[in-house]
Amino acid sequence: MKIGIDLDETLADSINAFLRYFNETYKTQLTRAQLITYPHIIQNSTIQDMIKHFEDFDKSPYTQLIKPLPGTQEIIFQLTKDHELYIITARPNKMANPTKQWIATHFPDQFQDIVHTSLLDTGKTKSKVGKELGIEMIIDDSITNVEDCAKEGINNLQPKVKKLK
Image 1: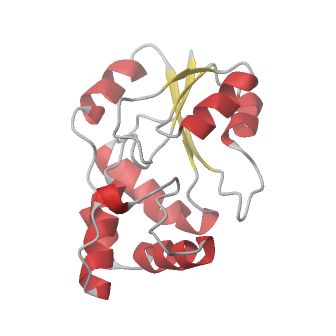
Image 2: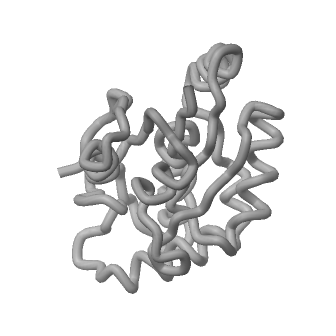
Image 3: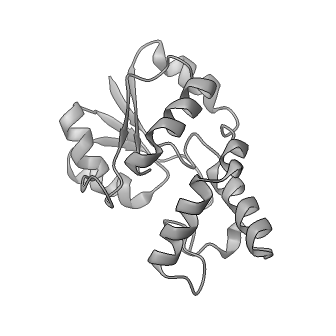
């Protein structure tokens, strides 16, 4: 089976690294509970503010703090025995090299491809990419992505994560 897997907050503990960056850079005490919607909007921030914060974070050494979520390496290793795995991430294309390096470090030789779907630069949804690749199942922490894929006939599995309000 071909399985598409999201990266941030499905395999990678990105938010904790982002929060550390944000708090140390802006001298705040922002917590995960204060993030109000996907993609992790900070109260009183616009989407343009968040894009800028994530772009600055992506250029920072704090990205080196991103670790795999507990248990994900073992699960991915088991899945690769019987399935073709693809990373389908909403990260922008300009993050392709650091993303590839992170995957090579933490999940070496486990994925067939890494596809970036940021609507800011590709205009493609994860469901569209999934259909193009022949993905039969998507694993993603975003209910929006899961529901969109389901509408396209792609089965889904949503990991149990703390949902943002």
